[in-house]
Length: 311
Image: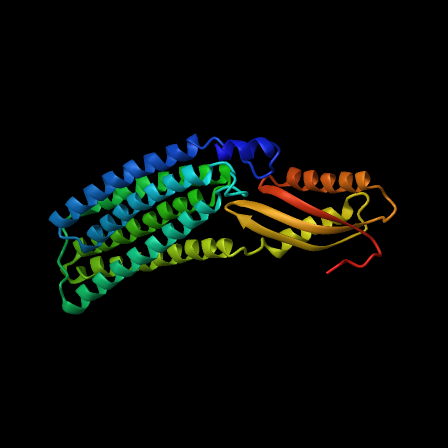
């Protein structure tokens, strides 16, 4: 029971985030079911209707199902409490899942683009059947609804991996829209049959852009990139404005999943008591955590003003 022993000694551990993940699990599970149904429908209609773009979009939906399971695992393990081996919890698991989702999108986009360009180059483009347009239309409606719901949940819980899934859904809307446009053009004229493959290329570019953005954001967080300079400046001013603080330096921040961990050195009157210095440090910590719920811990080093810091 090592985890229980650790928690009993750190009952006030600031990194403990008691979050009910039921709404998160619900939106991901519903998304998984819809993605699976869409993948099956688009694959069948795409093959029968001879639409390369629709089949490519079906493969994209299959990848969505895989990433959905990745997100579910990340939500579960990422919200486990801190233990003796993971003092800051497991939130970075969500960041890793965010990167996985992004890389999956990049890989799918590259494969779709390669197949479409190859088909155009070799002249292996066929005219799709008219009923394939309906499959694309249903996809647009379903994925747009999923996007808004998932984004709402992601913002409510400030979950980067859920927000990544939301934009994954939106990229599917872009993809299905391009597919539908290509299918419609191919029905208008036999000379425009190539538009189905062209739509597949456009879909690939859109998905590639979204996937790269998600991947880059995840990598920036995993290598401890600090929050925006404007945010750091606001926190620094909050510290300087706190009663008893004469100066501050070495303000450092890093992300732990979607949460923020901070450390700062402050200068105080060298004649105050240790108890008073502790009160100031605790006050700064609670003030910062009170203004931003993403902050899970603020380590404040108290130094007497005018005395050189030991190196």
